[in-house]
Image (cartoon, rainbow, N blue to C red; front, side, top):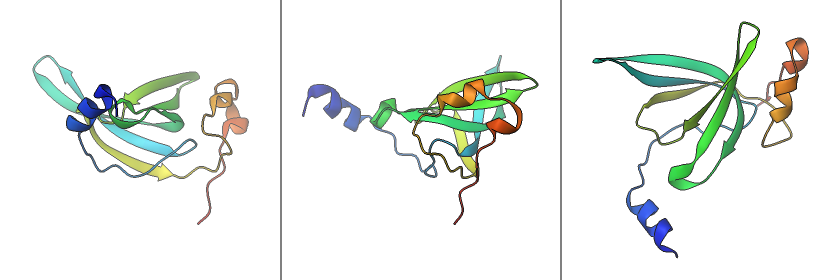
Length: 115
């Protein structure tokens, strides 16, 4: 084991988030500080990718704001993430669905996973 992984294990923060992957629609409640006030803002969108391991794990969410696509990368173990809620489970064949960037309208829909 190398030294970096030993230090990462020591400072690892364990948070209980639900398991999610590419294609899932999730809502991330994110703490935003404006001056001396703090509020929680929700960011709801489709997970495009989940990458990294351990403390460096991140996930990218894409949502449409009007006609403009907005992507945001969240560190999984950020202290600013209040909660993560899964709204829909998506059925996709890939781990990284960057092809969603070029699609608009009905073509950008993702099938819902059946249980």
